[in-house]
Image 1 (cartoon, rainbow, N blue to C red):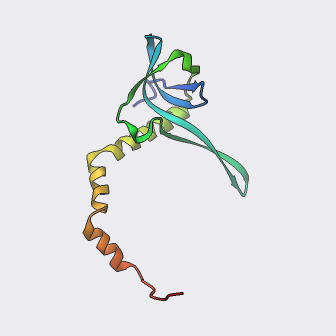
Image 2 (image 1 turned 90 degrees about the vertical axis):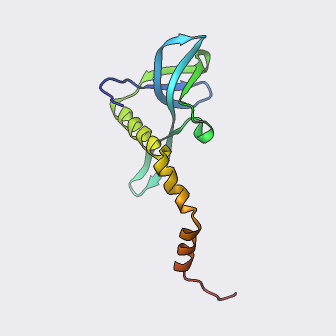
Image 3 (image 1 turned 90 degrees about the horizontal axis):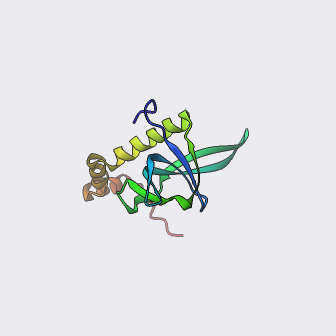
Length: 133
């Protein structure tokens, strides 16, 4: 993904959700075609310096599908805007991380965690207190 040639769009849906995605130029059957949508969510945290807001991006439909192309009825979209350069870079970073985590090698490493030998090694390294209260 390259922000020099790709313009990402921010969509505000009628249900309040905000998405960043690639948006096709044409409307087909009264629907927008979007690719790789990520849900945008602003979270506030209190720090010593005061409240700070941070943006998190997550899969819009979550782990429920491996589909990357979706159609959204035009009547469900409240507004469409170009994503800023900074948001576009963040979107690309998150998309790369999602792709990495979806790779077979990464999934295999997670499967190995469930390996019985690894579990036994972890248990043997734990200090167990036999005290009963």
